[in-house]
Length: 244
Image (cartoon, rainbow, N blue to C red; front, side, top):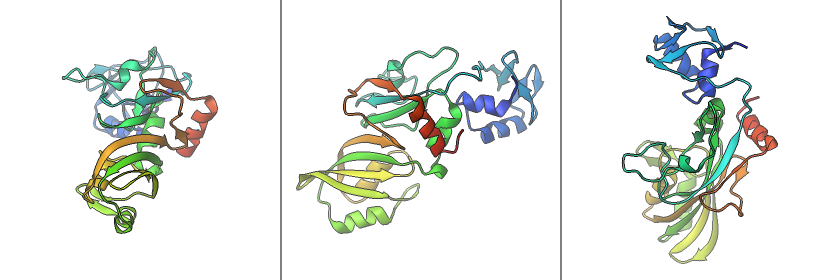
């Protein structure tokens, strides 16, 4: 079965379909020794290169899979690190002819739920702010929090990369200057939860992602462990981003 180049590369997680189309227009992709054109199709026997580097193509019929991983503190969200710090990818099961693509990321000091998939288009859509996918965090705050501060955080705060806000804030257990809150965002900018709270003069002493879209972090899943989502859970995620 032949497919368009942009669909194949998006499935591999190299970029979105639109980005691949731009690569084709820029002449960065070659198909069977010739510069690829928009609309060109390929199959498993095709020879594809990106910037003169060969691209290994995964079978189109490979089932869509999603893993849920409970990230501990101290692990980084990259495949390779010059400082040799432990990576979240090192604990994942091996894929044959494919690779795990991370959905969003967490900084080294943040714990909790990470999703991985073998479907690049699904990863792209779940991460893209236009789909407004909810991310929920448990946050422990060190400092004094009042109603005025909470209202500012929901109405919007100007950070260095633009306006940001929580769509929900719920106080949890704890009293005084060390209290837990659950907060919800519909985007995933770098360190956004921490930066929002720190803009109000308080400190985030603990941060755990407990939900991404419809998928919550199971209480029984220990740090450093993963589980594979069921077919119905994967389909539910795909429907949330209008992916059949």
